[in-house]
Length: 427
Ligand SMILES: Cc1cc2nc3c(=O)[nH]c(=O)nc-3n(C[C@H](O)[C@H](O)[C@H](O)COP(=O)(O)OP(=O)(O)OC[C@H]3O[C@@H](n4cnc5c(N)ncnc54)[C@H](O)[C@@H]3O)c2cc1C
Image 1 (tube, rainbow, N blue to C red):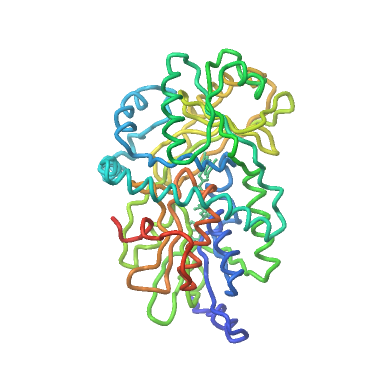
Image 2: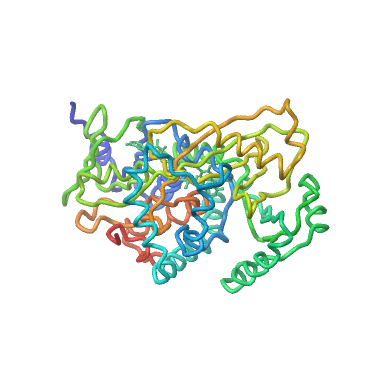
């Protein structure tokens, strides 16, 4: 093992501090760029090419209306039915159950009303600040065209669930989320490709989406490199910190930095092992199918309230995403999930039943904590080490604001939002 201090050597040429960002997903990329904006010399480290983790395959939707944590009394009451439904959105692979059980117990505990309220406050303040943060980030790198104000539709098939939609609209409006209940006729006008038997929908006119999640990562990375950022393609195997520096042990070397931010998504837990902090982070597996679809287009992302999946228009075609599967980081994708996504997509958009349509399949790992809040914090004892991970289903939505927050903590400037809900030692 060599002991190279490249970053520290570079530091001799400048007055700026050296920073490592571990993980080049959308959160790490935004963090690296934000640290550069504040004048730090930044090295981004990933064992893979940038943007190839969960950030590659998301639906591109900025889901700012999702202000409720995943764990709630309502979720727990519906969990058994979801698990028993062969096409349901929730899965607990048996081979991993012994490992996911402690996390599940914490997830159940997080459904108590006081915790739900704390999580809602934490999610709401991040989601409210999410879009302006993205606008700042993209304007700064000349990529504003990646973001479009598309709107979003949450659709219902069953007329018997009209009351659910009305109640949900009232609930969201009370939290300042603008949405409108629309009937089947208006829905058909807005989205003619949707099946004609839908009953009603909630329309979110302020919702936005990214044009193409992987292209977004490529643009963020290109801007980072153009500003002098350094990329090291190596796996980080150990993290230690003292009062002087942070040491990152990689497969090839030990790299030293003035400060480091762990943004390794669902893999972050292992990297905290040597730092005396344990977080109950799970890999919440989600699936997508991407369809190159010249025959059918949608104007905006569509969520199905009953089937619990989202189908989203991207530059590359239509992408259907779904599933919450607690299967860890090693299990292979389960093939029948793709069949279910195909079935759901065709039920909502009949033209997708075309047998010649080409379809790509993908599975990725959402980084999820039991209370649905991310960790955005400084290590309580090693203040040169910081964290930004655990944004669950909302990692794309919250990436730019999470980056602003963690870099404010790093720089010692007063953050624009309260960092308390995201403390690393809250568990
Ligand atoms: C099917 C699906 C659909 C989704 N849809 C949406 C959506 O529409 N909107 C939304 O807001 N969110 C969505 N999400 C969630 C979102 O994609 C994630 O929350 C987000 O991508 C997480 O970003 P990240 O940077 O934290 O992690 P990742 O993108 O997973 O990046 C982590 C990086 O760390 C690297 N890494 C890990 N370990 C190490 C190590 N030891 N050394 C070096 N590097 C390491 C990995 O290689 C990876 O590049 C979806 C997720 C899925 C799975």
